[in-house]
Length: 79
Image (cartoon, rainbow, N blue to C red; front, side):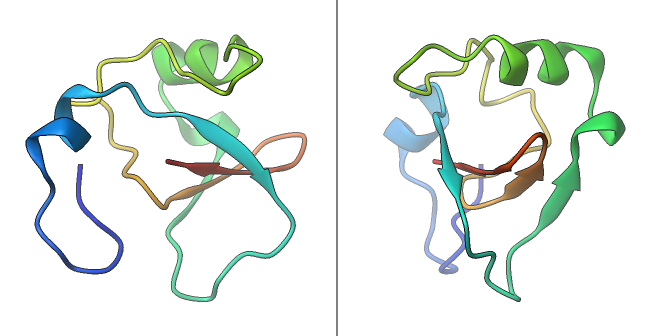
């Protein structure tokens, strides 16, 4: 996964499962993905995120990057 601030991604960022958090403001520089445009596997991971926001998805195989925004029933930031 890439870093939104242009810094290299650490090994922990690549191996640690991403989490999602609701956001109300979307920075103009953020990459935005619409839920229905994501793979079925990614859609399932987003719709079944744990209460803490943990996604059951391999971070090395998803096209989502930390800092991306997903338009779902609300805006979700990938962390």
